[in-house]
Image (cartoon, rainbow, N blue to C red; front, side):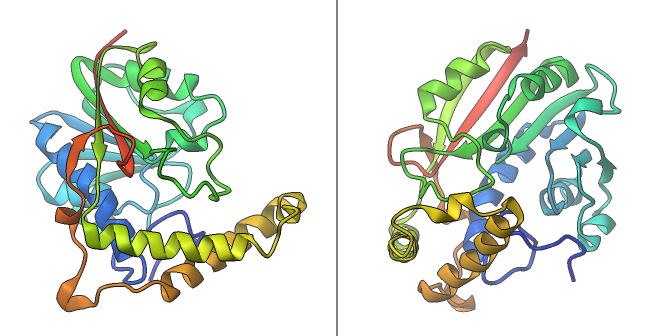
Length: 256
């Protein structure tokens, strides 16, 4: 059982209700494995640690860092976990061949220190991989997201810290798009109950508690494939960073 409080935002391995969301994020970790090589890997903002564990199980020498502790289930795979904040990362500069940071930048009001830290931690010939929701396809109701990006906007920001930035996009199969559209319709119906947006005036802990409850409700009401027809990472093909992709994937090289 997880030792991290459920928030509706942080995912936990083995969650059937959030299996589609996990598969969507596992695509990024599959790409990270391709770039890991023989050097050290940093999973920056690793959350519950399931991705760090997957990288370690694949043979990578990996460090997972977050401001909260990982799930107990993520620890045995062989990764090293560090609990720290961006303001005080206790890791050596130019140490990592790969820095993977997935679904993090949208949480930051000022991503400058975060991107500076990634650039400093990378080896000169290292690679940074970042993902974030595509603002053009996002439902826009996640209270943990401070700012969501379009592809050109994100690329422009990343080029302040990296000389080479390649933008890709994580797409979705037709059946996944149908499920996500069912979710979106459910979310829109819930939002219509609050036309004056009074929810935004609630204390922050209340907003987060409600979001967690609604995240579960929306997924239970939307048709989710059963175990025999489970959504997998193959349902999320990587292609161009176009208007229809679900997530933006940035491949960054040559840290400045």
